[in-house]
Image (spheres, rainbow, N blue to C red):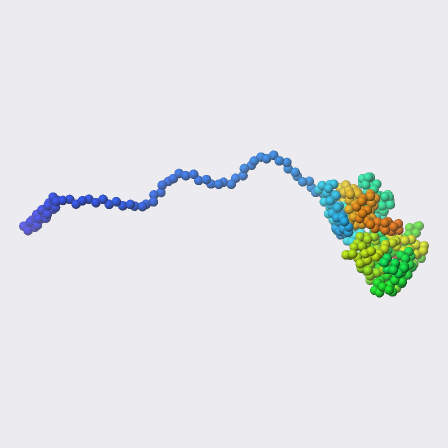
Length: 464
């Protein structure tokens, strides 16, 4: 009963509540952040590296192959002693100007004449084409010509160029009618330099004989303590043979007799060598000269240490330069002395351009030789190296005449020119002669014995 009443009560409460006022509804607003991926259509520019070929009209110049010609010469070709470029500079310049693409390569040779000769002979015997053009001595022409080592030039060079060379110059570089070299492009001739100031002060004339020279030393040296009498190069070398030739002819001797046999062991030859020996024994020439080359004896003279020196004309290039010489303005240059019956003699060293018969470029070398031998090349040669060239047109050039104030002295010395010993075996002959001469000067043999031995060997060599 109680339960029924309770239920009933609850229902009433509920019904009353439903019939009462209703509560007000609330609206809740919230902002919510969220990320939404929205697809967007876009254009992206990506740089692309590409090559565009555009046709262009052009002219392509393909360089021609260069022609290289080798030239056998010594270190002086890189030197100048006057108001001009070194000769090698000139030679390369004119070759390139006249024959574009032509290069000149220097094949360096020793200054020593013996070694230079032997180097060339080695090329020739082996028929080696290394050397195309060369600088060659006149005293090699007989030997080189007999062996067929050089190209005959008389029918290859331009006649207009050949006409500028006198016959004597052409003969110097000829063998049995073949012109084997064109020159001289440089020439040397021996003479006697002396201290003119000291001779003049003592009232002594320039010597004409060997006796005059010794007398001058005996007069002047006692008043000039420490000064030597006469210097000349006497080392066992080609230079000794050159100086010997001057003494030999100065005493009336000669190389060979009419039958082409060695005549240097004649009475005149023995007297000449005895005189040379006496210069060392009596102190007129110092013992150390037995190891001197030309530069050594010349240095002593320009340093004011000696009264006389035997030397070539190229000493004139700097003898008056006060920065190089202590005897500037105090010297004289005259022909070598000679005894009665002898002849004043200046040994000539003439050098020319030549072409190796083993060259693979003979025609091209001939073309270059034509421009080298012509006046435009020989003028700067003269200004760089000195006054002796075979091209006579050189001496009509105003710069040459102005640059060679000592030319009259050289021309006077040139009157005494003495050619080298003629032999088809010049290298072997010189080797024998320098050895025998040096043995006599150093006291190992008498003059007669040395010259007898020399002549016996030379006659055998030339008879082969």
